[in-house]
Every structure is written in structure tokens, then in C-alpha cells.
Length: 273
Ligand SMILES: NC(=O)c1ccc[n+]([C@@H]2O[C@H](COP(=O)([O-])OP(=O)(O)OC[C@H]3O[C@@H](n4cnc5c(N)ncnc54)[C@H](OP(=O)(O)O)[C@@H]3O)[C@@H](O)[C@H]2O)c1
Image 1 (cartoon, rainbow, N blue to C red):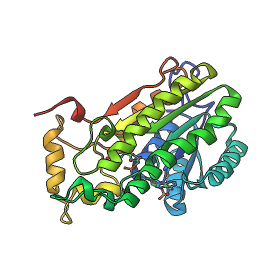
Image 2: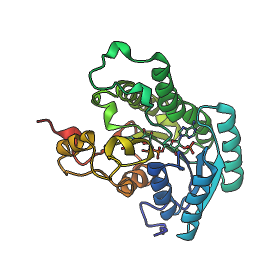
Image 3: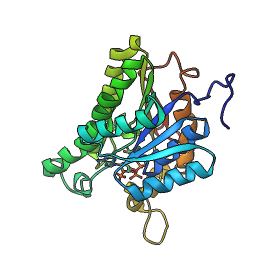
Image 4: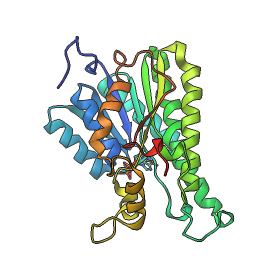
């Protein structure tokens, strides 16, 4: 699938960093960017899952490396940036896919908002807003600004557009990610750096499997509720994010697109009862 020069989606002149490429959605996006020719750096804390993803990309004919990095630690991100720039050339695509909820930040049924733990709130905001967007944009954005070329793609959530019941901190943090995306898009628009977001609906992954499925593999009550509210009547598959991420990553395909939020949710956000 590696492109030719006539291919709008050719990424063979690009170096892509996927923070959270060790996870389900970030991993699928790493696969997609590599399939269109990008040199892909998978970043995260899990060396085992990172190396497995790199082997999978290489087996498919792509170019990839794993670099250990903590998205909440600027020094760690700076070290990773230098290593990736050295190995693959200047980073031109950043996918910020580190994120997730915390069990203590989910209000149990019947519990009141006033009981929400401040520590859990801070944890979710740190992970999704600071590690999931702010610090990576600062660190990798610097390289892109130096080169005058880059595409930053923040993985927000449909929950950031309309808050989901019970997961208030996660919803609010993702709303902040969308706001930061718009701010940065304006800030860097004339400097060659585009900043957009993808908002997935519900995709089974490690962090939400227990929420969506029972131990016997059937849908949980919450899972059934979500499917019932999704016009396509199913969850998404991680590979279904490939088109959005490749399009936003490609300077040729989306050259005049910045500050946008691309929703991939089977219609969840577009409907009510
Ligand atoms: N699945 C969905 O339905 C859904 C819907 C909307 C939005 N999202 C968003 O999509 C993104 C990916 O989530 P996922 O569903 O694919 O879950 P996942 O499989 O649990 O992936 C989350 C990733 O975040 C990384 N991460 C967490 N803390 C980190 C840190 N301090 N430094 C570096 N990496 C860190 C983890 O990597 P390590 O453990 O290797 O550090 C993990 O690979 C998240 O932002 C999530 O909020 C998911």
C-alpha cells in the first residue's frame, strides 16, 4: 500500500510518533500510518506490547521502532523525541493516543457527583489532557515548528462533545483536549503545523473491556445501553480509525484542514431517543 508520488495519502516522507501506540487504538493507527509508508515510532511504557506492535508492522513490510516514554514526563518525551529524530528523521506526524479513565473517577450507580474523588479527577485530567495532549504537543511540536511542517492528531472522545453519564472527569478532560486542539490549530496555522482531533465512539480496548462485556463475553448492561444508542448497532473496530488518521496525517490529503474534530462513532453522537 506504500504510496507513489501521485498518491494523496503517501506518507513515505514522514516520521510518525504514536504515543500510546502500545494500546489498542494507538496500535491500529500505527499500523495504518506504516502501511501508507510512514516511518513509525511506537511510544509508551509497555516495552512488551510496544515491541510486539513493531514486529507486526515490520512483518507487514513497514518501518517501525519502539521507544519507551512516559507521556506525563517532559524529560522522557524529550529523550524519546531526540531518539526518534536521530533514527528516522524529524518527526512530522504526532498521534497523541495515551489516555483512559480511572475506576475511582467513575461514579457508581446511585452515587452523587459530590462524592467524586479529587485525586481520581486529577489523575484523569493529568493522563488525558496533560499527558494525552499538552506535553506531547509541546515537545514534538517544537521539532515541527523548526521544520515548518507537521500534523498533530489528538485522540479525544465522543464523550468530550456530550458528557457520558457517570464518567464526568474523563468527559471533561476530553472536552479540554478538543479545546486545546482548537487553540493550537490557530496558534500554529501559519507555521506549517496542523492540529486536529479524532473522537472515537465506543471501541473495545483494554481500558474499557470490563465496562462493555461481562466475564462470559456477553455485553454488560452498559454495553447493551451503548449499542442500543448507536445507530449502527455495534461497537467500532480499531481498524476503522485508519482512514481518519491517514487522511489527517497526510499533508497532501488534508492540507487545508486544521482545528477539526473527526468523529468516528457509528452515529452515536448524532442521535437521541
Ligand atoms: N476505546 C474506546 O472506546 C475509546 C473511545 C474514545 C476515546 N478513546 C481514547 O483513545 C485513546 C487510546 O485508548 P485505547 O482505548 O486504545 O486504550 P488502551 O488500549 O488502554 O491504550 C491506552 C494507551 O495509553 C498509554 N498510556 C497510558 N498512560 C501513559 C503514560 N503515562 N505514558 C505513555 N503512554 C501511556 C498506554 O500505554 P502504556 O501502558 O504502554 O504506557 C496504552 O497503550 C485514549 O486516549 C482513549 O481515551 C478510546
